[in-house]
Amino acid sequence: MERTPSTMKRHRQSLVRRDRNRAAKSKIRTFTKKAVAAAEAGDFESAAKFQKVVQGLVDKAAKGTVLHKNTAARKKSRLASRIRTLRDGAQA
Image (cartoon, rainbow, N blue to C red; front, top):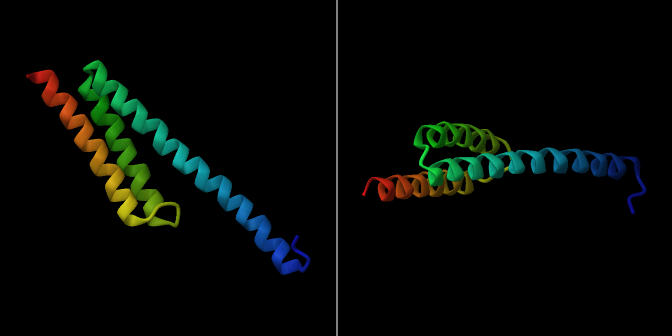
């Protein structure tokens, strides 16, 4: 257990950051699921709106220390690919 004032403060800060990071990641996952669900339902306009929201959230998370920039790029790419695949499959 931490004993010095500086380590106690660092621990408090880490807990605050942990909650903030978890909330950001959770929001990204939630809107990603909404985008995929909309695309699976055939509502590609809503899927595109959710995808745009996800891209903004991911970029904001990558701007800080929540996500690595390559992880952010991968998440955006996989979502776009999945929505594109569903759209092409629905059109065929």
